[in-house]
Length: 515
Image 1 (cartoon, rainbow, N blue to C red):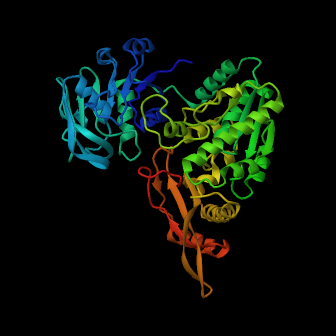
Image 2: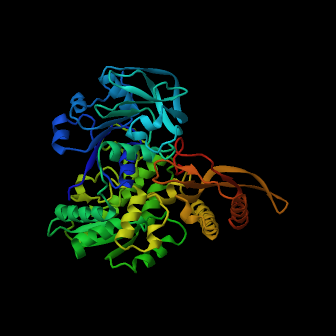
Image 3: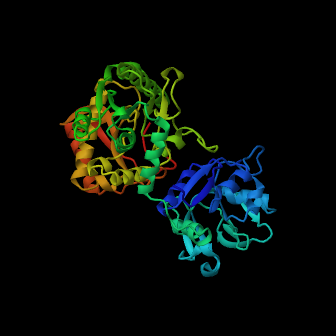
């Protein structure tokens, strides 16, 4: 199926995929391409528009990424975002300089006569609160451009050349913290590029099913790792839709699951018509994690152990050609720069390919989707709401929620504390309002008093965040009564805990998980 397409050139921003995500909210198909893609390829693709992403570099740096200057002469509308604006100005004869004061976080932007500033600003207030992240600014606009917005630290916060349909913003409209950001992108996509919005979850399901069939072929066999979450479940259902009984699902108990989770997952999947093999590998994982405290090492050990288990199970099944995974783009962008030059945040066990010895190829139908898109796909294919709304749970499980060494006693403490947090969150109706909510065991012991006796016990941190896509998140303003009840239950019902704290940090600068 052919869709109107907007091409996003990725200069390495952590937010690049969010641009594509916001366009998809508008039912507009988008593709992310390397920044040095040749003009000829872009012209052959005939996109409705081009967006230049942000990035961590300065345009004055040696080796800073560039795009083909000819794209500005194609007659295709171009929108530059942050680094994309600086690059557009630099390449077209403007002047870019280091900012006297770096802008990171919220900023107030004033738009010059929004009704006359061009189609990007239709319906946008004259002053908006935006998300900025830049160390350079545009000091002089290129010939033909007008300044259409300013901020306290950026006299040129947006510029436009309406005749050539070239537009640029020094802030990030794709980040949810930017007021009117979606309207600005809609103004570009619909108002400038003429996109009508012909990409839906139904069309994605059709396209994904066809891609899986083409990749696997008529005889290929696939194993799929099921975690119990919505990602792997939707991936398995898509593969099953494409190839039927040539799929075998494998659930691995890695020993770092939540309380009673293995039994609950098995019971859930009995209701789905998916061929399932359950493997208890908890002893293997816990043995390999013994004495390990570094979180990145934990992730790598768990990833390698998963590979070993799947390899062994695949051999028992006979000839298996493919391994299906529910990999999502937030996993990818934090692990490795897939398209551009983004920085490594943390590795994910399901990102980065397979060892050559496995002789299997990866099937990842959800690799460029966000969590809420996956949920929409799940609803589209008839998945029960219980699966659809399940909060994300990391592949390394509780191993990344125990700071320090993983031991059975510490796992027991965290499991029971986490269960109490979940119980109270659900009881108060907050579960589906939150992106994630969980407990973390800190390697901190402190003095307390219980029953008139001195205690010296561990600390539990409670983490609850709201998010739309997992790329940015804000800490949840839970009612004080709810926090008090969780704290009271934990210190009274989990022996070994005498202190509870609540995490009030957002992403960025923090991550959602503790590790």
